[in-house]
Image (cartoon, rainbow, N blue to C red; front, side, top):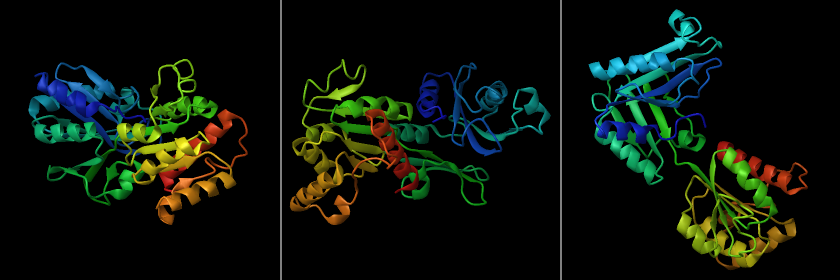
Length: 322
């Protein structure tokens, strides 16, 4: 993702420290704009900044606007594009256009609302920040915009002037089975924006030497999944081939809102797995959530190729829902 993930938290910290803070958010793009809608830059009253709204093209100009907005206590809607002489002068010459909303914390963006947003993010609660650019009304919404949450897509609603910024929890991947495929899948998933967790009670498999710097839980899978927490932004991938390890994890995953559940094994293994789960009381629609054999059918053979097929299927389910 090209958003600054901790912009709300940094803005609140700078405001609470008495430095002043402004949030600048990309609300609309055309052409080959360098950042997606929702990308954020946070600016302190002394000019320090973190994040990006253009990859460096217009940040200097936005900081100046933000500093002035903080002094006047007003929001600003900025637009930079190739046809705008001022924008061209600061480097946006790639044929794209971006529109940026500048909101001083306190005077425009209510501190209590920002504090609630930060708390929701800390609790991994999906929440939308809604602002009406005409009336200035701002609110946090958690019971609407299902399509936007599913696709992680911020933007304007319809033809109106209501901007919706989606704040989804970071993606997580729980891998049960510290096998060779996991050694390839975990770094791939991290590059794709996931926070990976490796679960394996077998010390010889889940070792620091095999997974340097990664989060390894040597607990029984059901206990580990309970401890980590499985929500709508979590993928669960089972790689052990061992029902003693896979099935306890499946019992937790199938009762959760995990967006993806995948299990390694042949069609015969999958059929046996389905039979055991049915005997355990799971309904067909629950069992049908399992992607098995796991991964896209790309003819994968070696562990890195299998890992690639798994990550590809995870991405398809995340973005398309199937």
